[in-house]
Image (cartoon, rainbow, N blue to C red; front, side, top):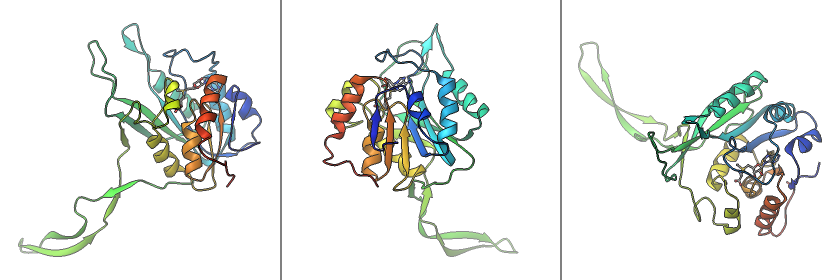
Length: 259
Ligand SMILES: C[S@@+](CC[C@H](N)C(=O)[O-])C[C@H]1O[C@@H](n2cnc3c(N)ncnc32)[C@H](O)[C@@H]1O
């Protein structure tokens, strides 16, 4: 297969060309229920999951960013149903992560503002790669540890704590024009995810030279960030209009290198 290319076709066609155990990481966000009418998409969820399982390497990961529409006064529950379907088809539900939007569109009605989407991390067996994002520990460096002696008296001793710890599985992002990406052309697509989200997920679950796939490439966010992080990538996008946006967005990189 040609790498570092967006295939303007149904992702089922692209995956049919891939050998088994081929992809290190899929980072993607499917069409959410029928929230948006993308240009003529055909979304055959069950077939896509089965193909994703086939083409994912043992130890590979799929990050599935999804949310529910609200219909007839209730949330559809599609996200949960999809997660269960992935599990029924061999994937391990490795981590149910949250994409928290600091500044979502306000919503009306008798429920709180919708602030988050799921980022389901599915793995084929245990993940091969985990490069966690870390933060400083509150008590890093040397701290006073309290100990009670046999007579109950308190003694203090200086001990060294690890200075870094893994962050939690809720990732916080500000979104919108000029924030999700500075590439104005990308905002011609109605549903992009933030570049920082792609950056965090790709760094966590893959290494330089790995192959990253996005079966719903949209404006090309995964392609751009995979390229910047020195991963190879492949994308599928059914809409010619969006492929054009993504390809224009990638033009800023003089040459598309194969690592
Ligand atoms: C939520 S958007 C992805 C946006 C992307 N993450 C970004 O940052 O720009 C979903 C995309 O999937 C595309 N799509 C829908 N069904 C498809 C299919 N069967 N194969 C490939 N692409 C499809 C839509 O045209 C749409 O652009």
